[in-house]
Length: 107
Length: 120
Image (cartoon, rainbow over all chains, first blue to last red; front, side, top):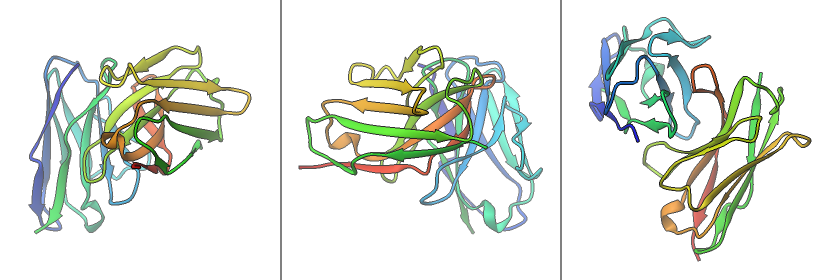
């Protein structure tokens, strides 16, 4: 299985801050990464697919980058509704695997 | 727009079989666009992929669950089913039905999730 190591596990930030979350794959997966946002009690929501493609309806302050083994999700200017947990997922091969999650908390 | 709705018992006894159904509306599970799958999340923990099925009937399972899990489909009813046998307390989780866009293997649509507790 491909392991996805996500960091940090939590981050405290203020509204307007730039936040960066990273995910490292245990082997090369080209650009096959997706990113999700999950709020408490809700199903996750797809933000980014294929490492850098923005899902329809997702604000442009979210962006993704990377290829190979290292990937990044960036929130350019944190908004109140962005406080949530974020997960990466490798989409290169079955079995699909997720990172452990990053909780973005209010500073 | 696809809508997915999970249903099934919220309480299952240890050693028994967990059975859930996902009813899909707004699209066909015979579509070539999507895999139809299940993902779970234990309380307070992260996401775990269980497996998925394609319109051809091909299935893909998590190796850690493969010996206990079966995913099937009923195209006439527009339903996907999950069976997980010999459950233990470790199988307590919110179970999500999901549609994965085949071209990018990412989950476009999620069900609302159903909490299944394994307890006697």
